[in-house]
Amino acid sequence: MYQRKSNPNGVGRKGSYTKDIPDRAYKLCLLGLKDADLAVAFGVGVSTVNYWKQHKPAFAKAVKEGRMEADANVAKALYNRAIGYSHPDTVILTNRVDVYDEDGKKIETRTEPLIVDTIKHYPPSEYAAHKWLTLRQREWWAETQQIEHRHTHHGHIDFNHIIEQISDSERFTDAELKLALKLGLKARANTPETDD
Image (cartoon, rainbow, N blue to C red):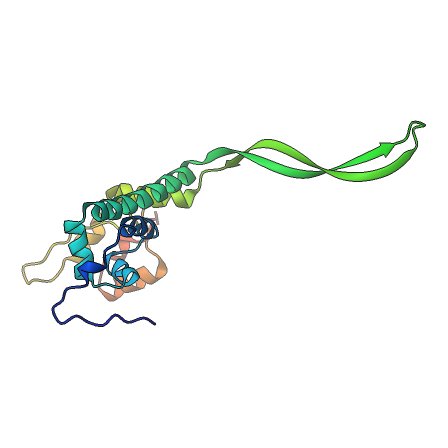
């Protein structure tokens, strides 16, 4: 594996900058490369990449646009997958053709390509929709939610207060119930009330 020699001054080779570097940086940023990755790709130190970003406007623009475009394209694709989408498509099928002579006698059977224009439909993806919403509205859609906790006057956490914050419709798994019981939590918050 390639290992770059360390520079005792902490500065890379600024003279290694060429006119094709912004275009290369743009393409590499589309792939998701970070500054340290760009440094390896160009055979320079991270400090050189930072120097180029500060003093080479074309490089800074290429890095910014490459990263923004990559993220925007992925966001668009995730959004489309979440809501479902359709697009024109061409399907190539095989069509069997019988050939007859002038007397109506079949003399040949051959296959010909049959090109059919169609619309391909992708239904909404529940996973993509959930992913999109957890990224965009974390406070509403995240798997875990913050629960307020209180300390007792002795500095211990009041676990019973936490349990009371959980709605009656939410239930614990068996493993969570066992843990709650070990901690001394009230089991009533976990089990549906029954009339005896």
